[in-house]
Length: 145
Image (cartoon, rainbow, N blue to C red):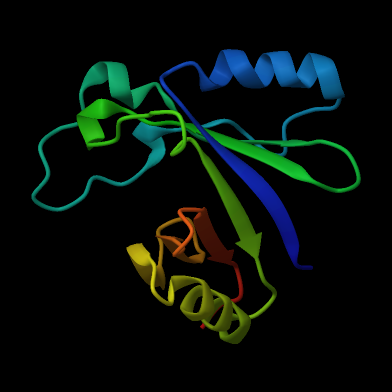
């Protein structure tokens, strides 16, 4: 089933922020807390720094009305610097790859593609972009090819 969520990037304190949000909204996290050490090593990349390995790669919490809050640490060792304005993404999870491509291409028109739609190690068809108005979007479709 399609859903929309808000994705937050943090400067290394995702776990503490989501522990706080859980006290506000209640409930449990949707699935485990994924860490950067859980991701397969990228070919040709240097080893991951130990302090980065334990950072949060992905976490989810249901809020109100079916809205999902997601988050990640954004390590500078991986080339990401969190600044006000780039720490929030709207994450769309369409039901089909065709709809993922339609949304991605429409939003990317006159914008900037950060990561083209592609199959990812977590099993989704994923891409990210900034639209022509500066809004950050992620498309994450779990329909298999």
